[in-house]
Image 1 (cartoon, one colour):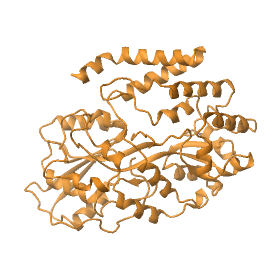
Image 2: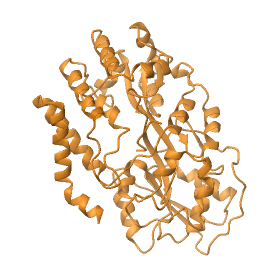
Image 3: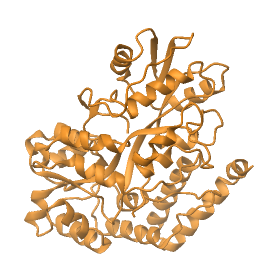
Image 4: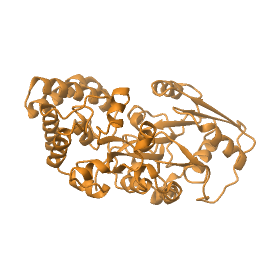
Length: 422
């Protein structure tokens, strides 16, 4: 089984409601009839109103939305107060900031008993909700989105490469094939990468930074080979250095000079927005190098300082396991009975030549294993990038670059690691 990093905010809402997946309950409303939800993205008001309409009419639901770059600090402040919110919506990319904090309800315990759903839950996503010790279930992942490769099928076919998704993914398992393709396309002014570190970035997306003892574990043969591949891309001029989020990068896409993009499952909608005239030319496939990675996932948690824990759980239970969650295109529910419902509702995507992308995303998500996420990951990522750029610019041997990375990780993060081990 391939490993992936469960590192999705809900995207485009297509339909509302789906068949009930578990028996309705009569809810007992506590004396405090207000439910407070904190989120890092908008769109919860309609869900809250549906919950009130269907299940709990005599309550007030308040939703507070924080900016993505501010919500972690706001949540941590809220967890430290005497009274806090009732539900927190968390991004798996930041779970390392919360999974060592003893401030959440254990959803495996009474009265939640979430374990009754484990048999029908995505295995990797289940692990993402555990605290770092794997002892408590501090959150439950509602949905996630694999990181995938969007590519121009017509370009692949024109230059003699596999153009069907599975065949292309199998061909690109070998780094040598990836490099050969990049060299072939570059002769025609077509690129496969935006940045020098993109090939290694794809590989890294399925690698943990640290193990459970906070030992750095990225020093591997695969990582060193990834550095060498990046060096080849730089030396052979195979990098566009054009940002697709700026006009210069989008112009490359419009001019048929970008053959591949590595994005979350929301990528098809974004590419279609940029180049609607290229409908039918794009496809989506698994990442190169036999890599299966989750771009991110969204979790729900109940703080221990909530005043309305029972009602908070009822909301979460109806959203994830019941019929409250809206059907969302390009998102994979972690509760397995819902995955087929989402796939049927999404149907074929005309922009992707009639491909049923939702089935691919569900298949990829089910292959994932949980990868450790720690409070140190963001700092480690910055150190790695810094050392890679310095080393490549200086022409250092790949093994030397790897050694420098490990040395800097252990030196710069030493104090934090010691604190976490206490």
